[in-house]
Image (cartoon, rainbow, N blue to C red):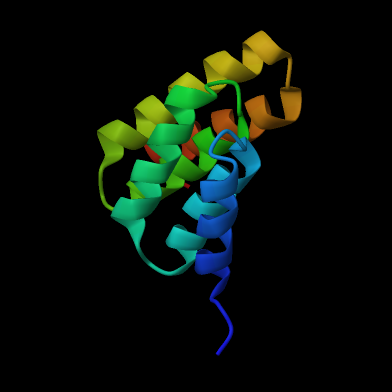
Length: 107
């Protein structure tokens, strides 16, 4: 029997816990498996270890939205907006602003 994608990612993470992409991939895999609390935990850990990994903020916000935790989702988007501005990542900034606006004012 082959290892699941999550098992493979967890092994990769054990080999190099500083790899932000693998950490992000684990969070996304948790998300796809419906393990939303695990995804939040993984995204939150990544946020602490690599706060400039700008891609995490959108997905952390969406995970909070799926959990019905609007206040946390807004905070995730706002934090990501600040990081995007700092990094001059205008694509991420646009996506985060849209997500925040949609959440606050409806689609």
